[in-house]
Image (cartoon, rainbow over the protein chains, first blue to last red):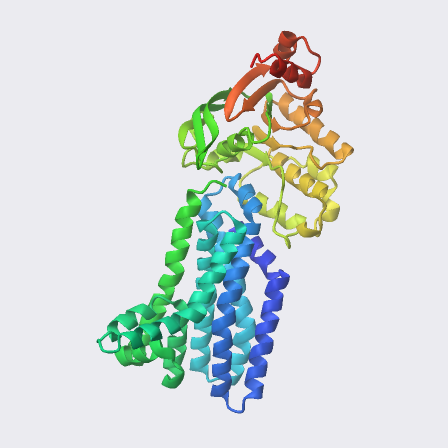
Length: 254
Length: 236
């Protein structure tokens, strides 16, 4: 569709996206060349990816959507369905940020890590980018106020990227006398960042670095099913927020 | 052409448009006036399908606009403040909107030429002045020879020459039988263009009258003076 093409061009020319690509590239190149073995470098890259990719995706997208308000109005005044406009914006943002990740982190990964791991990590990073674009879309629909929307998206990032695993660990210690492993596995599905961490670490097989949820996850599912399940859950993390935001957008007063 | 029946819209507790009834016909040039916050913009947005009414309906060319978007093929809209994605060029914006309206044959390139947009096709929207952005918006609104034109403060921010060009364009469109709906605070600018006046206050329709009748009834020379006269004498 026409709108999608030009939105994607617009975003990819955006200075922040260019800077983001360069920053990712710098981090991953230096991580791989500074560490003497590739798997150490991989873990460094993983930690950077799990923190920065969600942050940039969610913040940039939220701001972009709020700034596009008048542009969206203009598009709505033309004979196009609202759902098409919203989808075009979403795909435009998601594909540009995914491309930035692919160039910034994907290329060094393919060069330094073994192919299987590289592919899984690329997939995880792209999924993470898209998920947080979807979360951003939801934030921008939940409140009309730009400052509140940005605040909400930062809070969500903080929660998913930093607080969540700690919270689960805290719960586990509090209730360590009870058999709550199943419950913890269920909980880990509640955070896309943790799911991505699990996904990659299942592949790397370094349980020590897994964070708490990851360790339990592996116990329960083993590697194969764990991978499939976490991919499935991650896709849900794209579909549910986006679909929710789309429903709100259709009924929104612009 | 446009029939508005019992239109009501609340924003929270605020009633932006209050049981409004209004019929607008082709060939008319209607000035939509009223103090700030009187519901003009909400009314326009409701016609364009941007604001979804709480009650009432809008009939466009015999069809209810609810859950429809194809009726907008016949509308050209020029927003008060056009803001476009920063890194899009003028060329991209025009191509994109044309792409949305694919299948359209009857292009109107007058404004495109008169505003000399051709020379600036590669300029990014971010770098444009407010006036130039308005020129782009105006070009987009007139590009499809629409039967209905909705112009929100069309001359705001334009230099006198550009404003004169768009005024002439509005008169041409009216003579061709289009319906034109203009909001503006500068009543003097509209003086020689408009044929009807719609006056709104607190979301209610106060007055919908032919300009000639209005002037006769109030015995004033200009629209602005007539409105002031009406307000002072509390006729409305």
